[in-house]
Image (cartoon, rainbow, N blue to C red; front, side):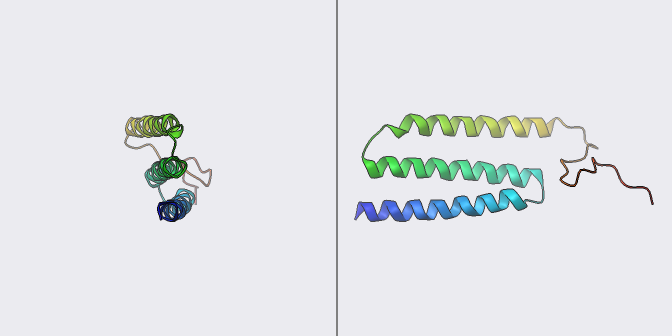
Length: 104
């Protein structure tokens, strides 16, 4: 019974990662993409924890801590960087215009 529950949890978390990667690719703003990346890391930690429970070992717990810490510190660094940008600075652009408008 526990094995079935763990497999269902891994399937659900994998689906959540797929949706997070979709939001990461299609996010309209940088903040949406950062939050999607944070969610993908969070669900990845969930998969690692579920695999640890499924195998009945504590080997993965150190990896879980490292991935969670790196994910948290990465998000804090990105948000601090974005917070320090000047108010009139353009966001990261995908089309390569560099925040410049074309002359008519």
